[in-house]
Image 1 (cartoon, rainbow, N blue to C red):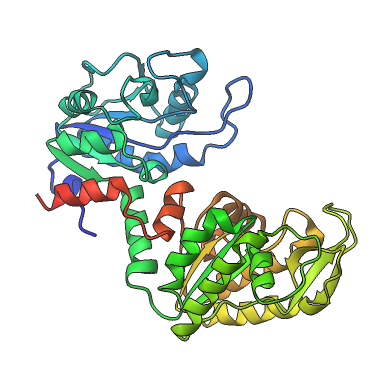
Image 2 (image 1 turned 120 degrees about the vertical axis):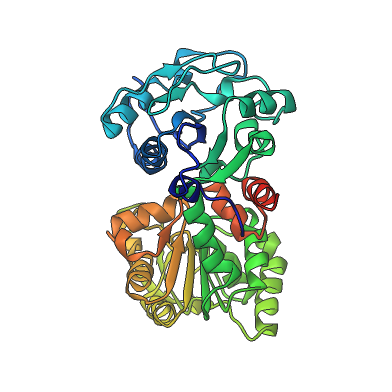
Length: 397
Protein backbone atom coordinates (compact mmCIF):
# COMPACT_ATOMS: atom_id res chain seq x y z
CA UNK A 1 0.00 0.00 0.00
CA UNK A 2 1.44 3.32 -1.07
CA UNK A 3 0.99 6.22 1.38
CA UNK A 4 2.94 9.43 2.01
CA UNK A 5 5.01 8.83 5.13
CA UNK A 6 5.48 11.70 7.55
CA UNK A 7 9.00 10.43 8.31
CA UNK A 8 9.91 10.99 4.64
CA UNK A 9 8.47 14.53 4.65
CA UNK A 10 10.58 15.34 7.73
CA UNK A 11 13.72 13.78 6.23
CA UNK A 12 13.21 15.86 3.08
CA UNK A 13 12.89 19.06 5.15
CA UNK A 14 9.27 19.53 4.04
CA UNK A 15 7.89 19.89 7.59
CA UNK A 16 10.15 22.81 8.63
CA UNK A 17 8.05 25.85 9.55
CA UNK A 18 4.85 24.02 8.56
CA UNK A 19 1.67 23.67 10.60
CA UNK A 20 1.33 19.95 11.34
CA UNK A 21 -1.92 18.41 12.60
CA UNK A 22 -1.43 14.98 14.21
CA UNK A 23 -4.43 12.72 14.88
CA UNK A 24 -3.14 10.48 17.66
CA UNK A 25 -4.89 7.78 19.68
CA UNK A 26 -4.70 9.03 23.27
CA UNK A 27 -7.88 7.29 24.44
CA UNK A 28 -6.44 5.99 27.72
CA UNK A 29 -8.16 4.28 30.67
CA UNK A 30 -8.70 6.46 33.75
CA UNK A 31 -9.81 5.89 37.34
CA UNK A 32 -12.77 7.69 38.96
CA UNK A 33 -10.52 10.61 39.90
CA UNK A 34 -9.45 11.05 36.27
CA UNK A 35 -5.93 9.66 36.75
CA UNK A 36 -4.49 7.70 33.81
CA UNK A 37 -4.19 4.03 34.82
CA UNK A 38 -2.33 2.78 31.70
CA UNK A 39 -0.37 5.11 29.40
CA UNK A 40 0.81 2.85 26.55
CA UNK A 41 -1.04 4.90 23.92
CA UNK A 42 0.37 8.20 25.17
CA UNK A 43 3.91 6.78 25.08
CA UNK A 44 3.29 5.33 21.60
CA UNK A 45 2.32 8.80 20.30
CA UNK A 46 5.56 10.47 21.40
CA UNK A 47 7.86 9.45 18.48
CA UNK A 48 5.59 11.15 15.91
CA UNK A 49 5.30 14.34 17.99
CA UNK A 50 9.08 14.44 18.57
CA UNK A 51 9.67 13.86 14.86
CA UNK A 52 7.50 16.89 14.03
CA UNK A 53 9.15 19.10 16.67
CA UNK A 54 12.66 18.05 15.60
CA UNK A 55 11.72 18.93 12.01
CA UNK A 56 10.88 22.49 13.10
CA UNK A 57 7.10 22.23 12.67
CA UNK A 58 4.32 24.02 14.56
CA UNK A 59 2.61 20.98 16.07
CA UNK A 60 -1.07 20.41 16.90
CA UNK A 61 -2.12 17.06 18.35
CA UNK A 62 -5.64 15.82 19.02
CA UNK A 63 -7.46 12.63 19.99
CA UNK A 64 -10.81 11.42 21.21
CA UNK A 65 -11.23 10.31 24.82
CA UNK A 66 -14.17 8.19 25.93
CA UNK A 67 -17.58 8.73 24.36
CA UNK A 68 -18.52 12.38 24.83
CA UNK A 69 -21.73 13.95 23.54
CA UNK A 70 -21.02 16.14 20.52
CA UNK A 71 -21.45 19.81 21.29
CA UNK A 72 -21.76 19.23 25.06
CA UNK A 73 -18.32 19.30 26.69
CA UNK A 74 -18.12 17.91 30.26
CA UNK A 75 -15.05 18.04 32.58
CA UNK A 76 -14.65 14.23 32.40
CA UNK A 77 -14.26 14.52 28.60
CA UNK A 78 -11.12 16.64 28.96
CA UNK A 79 -7.70 15.63 27.68
CA UNK A 80 -6.11 17.56 30.60
CA UNK A 81 -4.62 14.41 32.25
CA UNK A 82 -3.20 13.43 28.84
CA UNK A 83 -1.66 16.89 28.33
CA UNK A 84 0.05 16.55 31.71
CA UNK A 85 1.41 13.05 30.94
CA UNK A 86 2.49 14.09 27.45
CA UNK A 87 4.35 17.04 28.96
CA UNK A 88 6.22 14.70 31.31
CA UNK A 89 7.21 12.40 28.45
CA UNK A 90 8.29 15.25 26.15
CA UNK A 91 10.02 17.16 28.94
CA UNK A 92 8.14 20.37 28.15
CA UNK A 93 4.79 21.97 28.87
CA UNK A 94 2.00 20.93 26.51
CA UNK A 95 -0.74 23.61 26.57
CA UNK A 96 -4.32 22.31 26.19
CA UNK A 97 -6.45 24.31 23.74
CA UNK A 98 -10.27 24.29 23.83
CA UNK A 99 -12.67 25.58 21.13
CA UNK A 100 -9.99 25.21 18.48
CA UNK A 101 -11.92 24.46 15.28
CA UNK A 102 -11.85 28.07 14.01
CA UNK A 103 -8.16 28.69 14.64
CA UNK A 104 -5.11 27.66 16.69
CA UNK A 105 -2.14 29.80 17.78
CA UNK A 106 1.05 27.70 17.60
CA UNK A 107 4.57 28.59 16.46
CA UNK A 108 7.28 26.42 14.87
CA UNK A 109 9.00 24.42 17.62
CA UNK A 110 5.87 24.51 19.79
CA UNK A 111 3.32 21.76 20.49
CA UNK A 112 -0.27 22.15 21.69
CA UNK A 113 -2.88 19.50 22.51
CA UNK A 114 -6.31 20.22 21.05
CA UNK A 115 -9.20 19.26 23.33
CA UNK A 116 -11.21 16.05 22.76
CA UNK A 117 -12.06 16.03 19.03
CA UNK A 118 -15.26 14.01 19.50
CA UNK A 119 -16.87 16.97 21.28
CA UNK A 120 -16.90 18.81 17.93
CA UNK A 121 -20.29 18.67 16.21
CA UNK A 122 -20.06 16.55 13.08
CA UNK A 123 -16.89 14.63 14.07
CA UNK A 124 -18.37 11.12 14.08
CA UNK A 125 -20.48 11.65 10.94
CA UNK A 126 -17.47 13.09 9.09
CA UNK A 127 -19.25 16.36 8.38
CA UNK A 128 -17.71 17.97 5.29
CA UNK A 129 -17.89 21.57 6.58
CA UNK A 130 -16.07 20.52 9.78
CA UNK A 131 -13.48 18.52 7.81
CA UNK A 132 -12.70 21.55 5.62
CA UNK A 133 -12.25 23.76 8.72
CA UNK A 134 -9.85 21.19 10.22
CA UNK A 135 -7.90 20.96 6.96
CA UNK A 136 -7.54 24.76 6.92
CA UNK A 137 -5.70 24.61 10.27
CA UNK A 138 -2.68 22.81 8.83
CA UNK A 139 -0.22 22.39 5.98
CA UNK A 140 0.40 18.71 6.73
CA UNK A 141 -2.09 16.23 8.21
CA UNK A 142 -0.66 13.16 9.95
CA UNK A 143 -2.77 10.14 10.92
CA UNK A 144 -0.94 8.22 13.64
CA UNK A 145 -4.02 6.58 15.20
CA UNK A 146 -4.39 2.99 13.98
CA UNK A 147 -6.94 2.31 16.75
CA UNK A 148 -9.41 4.56 14.89
CA UNK A 149 -8.35 3.68 11.32
CA UNK A 150 -11.55 1.66 10.81
CA UNK A 151 -13.72 4.75 11.38
CA UNK A 152 -14.41 7.45 8.77
CA UNK A 153 -14.62 10.53 11.01
CA UNK A 154 -13.70 14.18 10.47
CA UNK A 155 -10.25 13.86 12.13
CA UNK A 156 -9.47 10.43 10.63
CA UNK A 157 -10.89 10.75 7.10
CA UNK A 158 -12.46 14.10 6.13
CA UNK A 159 -9.41 16.19 7.04
CA UNK A 160 -7.23 13.85 4.97
CA UNK A 161 -9.45 14.54 1.95
CA UNK A 162 -8.99 18.31 2.13
CA UNK A 163 -5.57 18.93 3.76
CA UNK A 164 -2.77 20.19 1.46
CA UNK A 165 -0.76 17.05 2.32
CA UNK A 166 -2.08 13.91 4.06
CA UNK A 167 0.41 11.45 5.53
CA UNK A 168 0.82 8.40 7.77
CA UNK A 169 2.65 8.82 11.06
CA UNK A 170 5.30 6.27 12.16
CA UNK A 171 2.83 4.21 14.24
CA UNK A 172 0.28 3.94 11.41
CA UNK A 173 3.02 3.26 8.84
CA UNK A 174 4.38 0.43 11.01
CA UNK A 175 0.89 -1.13 11.15
CA UNK A 176 0.55 -0.90 7.36
CA UNK A 177 3.96 -2.56 6.91
CA UNK A 178 3.22 -5.35 9.42
CA UNK A 179 -0.23 -6.07 7.98
CA UNK A 180 1.15 -6.14 4.41
CA UNK A 181 3.94 -8.49 5.47
CA UNK A 182 1.55 -10.84 7.30
CA UNK A 183 -1.44 -10.91 4.96
CA UNK A 184 -0.70 -9.39 1.56
CA UNK A 185 2.69 -11.01 0.94
CA UNK A 186 3.23 -13.61 3.69
CA UNK A 187 6.06 -16.07 3.91
CA UNK A 188 4.44 -19.53 3.90
CA UNK A 189 3.15 -21.47 5.67
CA UNK A 190 0.80 -18.82 7.07
CA UNK A 191 -0.86 -19.92 10.32
CA UNK A 192 -3.66 -17.90 11.92
CA UNK A 193 -4.79 -18.35 15.53
CA UNK A 194 -8.33 -17.05 16.03
CA UNK A 195 -9.85 -17.57 19.45
CA UNK A 196 -12.64 -16.05 21.46
CA UNK A 197 -15.91 -16.90 23.09
CA UNK A 198 -18.17 -16.75 20.03
CA UNK A 199 -17.96 -17.85 16.40
CA UNK A 200 -20.60 -15.21 15.53
CA UNK A 201 -18.26 -12.31 16.40
CA UNK A 202 -15.39 -13.80 14.38
CA UNK A 203 -17.27 -15.64 11.62
CA UNK A 204 -16.39 -13.18 8.83
CA UNK A 205 -12.75 -13.26 9.97
CA UNK A 206 -12.70 -17.07 9.88
CA UNK A 207 -14.31 -17.08 6.41
CA UNK A 208 -11.86 -14.47 5.09
CA UNK A 209 -8.78 -16.22 6.53
CA UNK A 210 -9.99 -19.61 5.27
CA UNK A 211 -9.28 -18.34 1.72
CA UNK A 212 -5.70 -17.37 2.51
CA UNK A 213 -4.09 -19.27 5.39
CA UNK A 214 -2.41 -22.68 5.42
CA UNK A 215 -3.55 -23.48 8.95
CA UNK A 216 -6.41 -21.97 10.98
CA UNK A 217 -6.07 -22.65 14.72
CA UNK A 218 -9.36 -22.05 16.57
CA UNK A 219 -9.55 -21.72 20.35
CA UNK A 220 -11.83 -20.80 23.23
CA UNK A 221 -15.59 -21.01 22.72
CA UNK A 222 -15.00 -20.89 18.95
CA UNK A 223 -13.14 -24.22 19.14
CA UNK A 224 -16.13 -25.80 20.91
CA UNK A 225 -18.39 -24.99 17.96
CA UNK A 226 -15.76 -26.54 15.64
CA UNK A 227 -15.62 -29.64 17.90
CA UNK A 228 -19.41 -29.96 17.45
CA UNK A 229 -18.91 -29.58 13.68
CA UNK A 230 -16.43 -32.48 13.82
CA UNK A 231 -19.05 -34.62 15.64
CA UNK A 232 -17.34 -34.50 19.05
CA UNK A 233 -19.07 -34.02 22.43
CA UNK A 234 -18.61 -30.74 24.31
CA UNK A 235 -20.73 -31.33 27.43
CA UNK A 236 -22.10 -28.02 28.74
CA UNK A 237 -19.29 -25.93 27.20
CA UNK A 238 -19.90 -22.52 25.68
CA UNK A 239 -20.72 -22.96 21.97
CA UNK A 240 -23.08 -21.85 19.20
CA UNK A 241 -24.79 -24.98 17.85
CA UNK A 242 -26.71 -22.92 15.25
CA UNK A 243 -23.39 -22.01 13.59
CA UNK A 244 -22.14 -25.60 13.18
CA UNK A 245 -23.00 -25.40 9.46
CA UNK A 246 -20.79 -22.32 9.03
CA UNK A 247 -17.96 -24.01 10.97
CA UNK A 248 -18.23 -27.08 8.69
CA UNK A 249 -18.11 -24.79 5.64
CA UNK A 250 -14.86 -23.21 6.90
CA UNK A 251 -13.36 -26.68 7.50
CA UNK A 252 -14.38 -27.80 3.98
CA UNK A 253 -13.12 -24.59 2.33
CA UNK A 254 -9.72 -25.12 3.97
CA UNK A 255 -9.64 -28.82 3.08
CA UNK A 256 -10.40 -28.03 -0.59
CA UNK A 257 -7.20 -25.94 -0.68
CA UNK A 258 -5.13 -28.62 1.06
CA UNK A 259 -5.11 -26.54 4.27
CA UNK A 260 -6.55 -27.51 7.65
CA UNK A 261 -8.38 -26.45 10.78
CA UNK A 262 -6.65 -28.59 13.45
CA UNK A 263 -9.40 -29.96 15.72
CA UNK A 264 -8.26 -30.50 19.37
CA UNK A 265 -7.56 -34.18 20.13
CA UNK A 266 -7.48 -33.59 23.89
CA UNK A 267 -8.92 -30.89 26.15
CA UNK A 268 -8.83 -29.68 29.76
CA UNK A 269 -12.21 -29.82 31.47
CA UNK A 270 -13.80 -28.81 34.76
CA UNK A 271 -17.24 -29.19 36.32
CA UNK A 272 -17.49 -25.44 37.07
CA UNK A 273 -16.18 -22.17 35.62
CA UNK A 274 -13.93 -21.19 38.53
CA UNK A 275 -10.24 -20.57 39.17
CA UNK A 276 -10.15 -23.29 41.84
CA UNK A 277 -12.17 -25.90 39.90
CA UNK A 278 -10.21 -29.18 39.56
CA UNK A 279 -8.82 -29.53 36.04
CA UNK A 280 -8.99 -32.85 34.16
CA UNK A 281 -7.24 -33.69 30.89
CA UNK A 282 -9.41 -35.83 28.59
CA UNK A 283 -9.44 -37.07 25.02
CA UNK A 284 -11.79 -34.82 23.04
CA UNK A 285 -14.04 -37.84 22.39
CA UNK A 286 -14.45 -38.50 26.14
CA UNK A 287 -15.98 -35.20 27.29
CA UNK A 288 -18.86 -35.91 29.71
CA UNK A 289 -22.31 -34.32 29.59
CA UNK A 290 -21.57 -32.15 32.68
CA UNK A 291 -18.04 -31.08 31.58
CA UNK A 292 -16.92 -27.58 30.63
CA UNK A 293 -14.00 -27.40 28.18
CA UNK A 294 -11.73 -24.59 29.41
CA UNK A 295 -8.45 -25.21 27.56
CA UNK A 296 -6.77 -27.35 24.90
CA UNK A 297 -4.96 -30.44 26.20
CA UNK A 298 -1.18 -31.08 26.22
CA UNK A 299 -1.17 -33.30 23.07
CA UNK A 300 -3.06 -30.66 21.09
CA UNK A 301 -0.84 -27.89 22.48
CA UNK A 302 2.28 -29.82 21.52
CA UNK A 303 1.00 -30.47 17.98
CA UNK A 304 0.04 -26.81 17.47
CA UNK A 305 3.35 -25.61 18.92
CA UNK A 306 5.23 -27.74 16.37
CA UNK A 307 3.15 -26.23 13.54
CA UNK A 308 3.80 -22.68 14.78
CA UNK A 309 7.54 -23.29 15.07
CA UNK A 310 7.58 -24.44 11.43
CA UNK A 311 5.47 -21.50 10.19
CA UNK A 312 6.68 -18.69 7.95
CA UNK A 313 4.09 -16.18 9.19
CA UNK A 314 1.80 -16.21 12.27
CA UNK A 315 -1.28 -14.04 12.86
CA UNK A 316 -2.57 -14.28 16.45
CA UNK A 317 -5.88 -13.02 17.79
CA UNK A 318 -7.13 -14.52 21.03
CA UNK A 319 -6.03 -16.91 23.83
CA UNK A 320 -6.97 -20.58 23.33
CA UNK A 321 -8.24 -21.18 26.87
CA UNK A 322 -9.28 -19.42 30.06
CA UNK A 323 -5.71 -18.26 30.65
CA UNK A 324 -6.75 -15.98 33.53
CA UNK A 325 -7.16 -19.19 35.60
CA UNK A 326 -3.74 -20.86 36.02
CA UNK A 327 -5.17 -24.40 35.81
CA UNK A 328 -6.51 -23.59 32.33
CA UNK A 329 -3.64 -21.42 31.07
CA UNK A 330 -1.22 -24.11 29.85
CA UNK A 331 -2.58 -24.16 26.28
CA UNK A 332 -2.30 -20.41 25.83
CA UNK A 333 1.16 -20.45 27.41
CA UNK A 334 2.30 -23.22 25.02
CA UNK A 335 1.00 -21.20 22.04
CA UNK A 336 2.69 -18.02 23.34
CA UNK A 337 6.02 -19.80 23.87
CA UNK A 338 5.83 -21.38 20.39
CA UNK A 339 5.12 -17.99 18.78
CA UNK A 340 8.10 -16.56 20.71
CA UNK A 341 10.44 -19.39 19.66
CA UNK A 342 9.30 -19.54 16.02
CA UNK A 343 11.45 -17.90 13.36
CA UNK A 344 8.19 -16.84 11.65
CA UNK A 345 7.17 -13.19 11.33
CA UNK A 346 4.35 -12.82 13.87
CA UNK A 347 1.69 -10.16 14.27
CA UNK A 348 -0.62 -10.16 17.30
CA UNK A 349 -3.60 -8.00 18.21
CA UNK A 350 -6.62 -7.77 20.49
CA UNK A 351 -6.83 -6.97 24.20
CA UNK A 352 -6.80 -10.54 25.56
CA UNK A 353 -3.93 -11.49 23.26
CA UNK A 354 -1.86 -8.55 24.49
CA UNK A 355 -2.67 -9.56 28.10
CA UNK A 356 -1.39 -13.08 27.37
CA UNK A 357 1.76 -11.72 25.72
CA UNK A 358 2.38 -9.55 28.80
CA UNK A 359 1.64 -12.45 31.20
CA UNK A 360 4.31 -14.64 29.57
CA UNK A 361 6.77 -11.80 28.98
CA UNK A 362 7.23 -12.44 25.26
CA UNK A 363 6.72 -8.86 23.98
CA UNK A 364 10.22 -8.74 22.47
CA UNK A 365 9.72 -12.07 20.69
CA UNK A 366 6.58 -11.10 18.74
CA UNK A 367 7.34 -9.53 15.35
CA UNK A 368 4.67 -6.86 15.67
CA UNK A 369 2.08 -6.10 18.34
CA UNK A 370 -0.88 -4.22 16.86
CA UNK A 371 -2.22 -1.24 18.79
CA UNK A 372 -5.77 -1.43 17.41
CA UNK A 373 -8.57 -3.75 18.54
CA UNK A 374 -11.47 -3.19 16.14
CA UNK A 375 -9.17 -1.99 13.37
CA UNK A 376 -7.02 -5.12 13.62
CA UNK A 377 -10.10 -7.37 13.45
CA UNK A 378 -11.41 -5.54 10.36
CA UNK A 379 -8.05 -6.04 8.64
CA UNK A 380 -8.31 -9.78 9.39
CA UNK A 381 -11.80 -9.71 7.85
CA UNK A 382 -10.19 -8.55 4.64
CA UNK A 383 -11.70 -5.06 4.80
CA UNK A 384 -9.88 -1.95 3.58
CA UNK A 385 -9.77 0.51 6.47
CA UNK A 386 -11.10 4.01 5.67
CA UNK A 387 -7.91 5.71 6.95
CA UNK A 388 -5.74 3.48 4.73
CA UNK A 389 -8.00 4.06 1.73
CA UNK A 390 -7.95 7.89 1.90
CA UNK A 391 -4.20 8.12 2.60
CA UNK A 392 -3.49 5.78 -0.29
CA UNK A 393 -5.80 7.82 -2.58
CA UNK A 394 -4.07 11.07 -1.59
CA UNK A 395 -0.64 9.53 -2.21
CA UNK A 396 -1.76 8.57 -5.71
CA UNK A 397 -2.59 12.25 -6.31
